Image 1 (tube, rainbow, N blue to C red):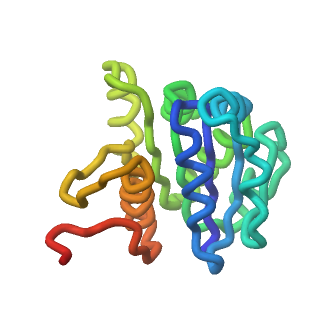
Image 2: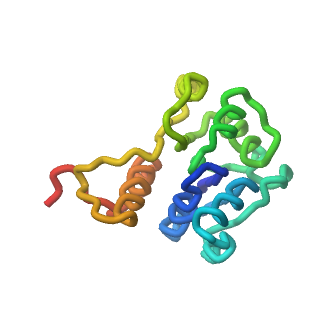
Length: 185
C-alpha cells in the first residue's frame, strides 16, 4: 500500500509521528508536515521530527514542494490520512483550496476518488467545522477525530494513543494489535 500521511499544526501533532513510527514496513509512506505542525511538535513535545523518519519505507516531503510526486494524480497512491487535521486545513480541504502540498495532495485524492481519512482536532467543534466535516463526509472522506473508546481499558497516555492509532489503522485496513478490542480476553 502507498499511503500519504499529512501532519498539520493542530494540537497532538505527535500522534502523526507515532502513527508513522508504528506503520508496518510493507507500507510505503509519503509524509508531509506543515510548518505549523513543526511548531506544534516543538512547543508541545520539544520534538525534532526528523529523528522519527529514519524508516526505509518513509519518504518525507516539504509542504512547499508542490512538484512532489504526491501532487499528481498520475502518481499512484492508495490512501491518505491527515493526522491531526487543523481547522485551517479542514476548511481549505472543504473549499478545494490547494495552496500547499498537503492540500494539493488532498485535492488529487478527492478527484481520483481515493480513500481519505481526516482526524480533525480541537474541542468543541464549531458549526463551521461541523459543516466542513459534513461536506467532506458527503464526498466520501472518512471523518475520524481522536475519540477514545473506554472499553479497551487504557491506563496510560501511551495506551490511549495506541487505541487511536489502532482505530485509524483499522480504517485503513492495516492489521494491528495496538489495543484491546471489544470483549477481547
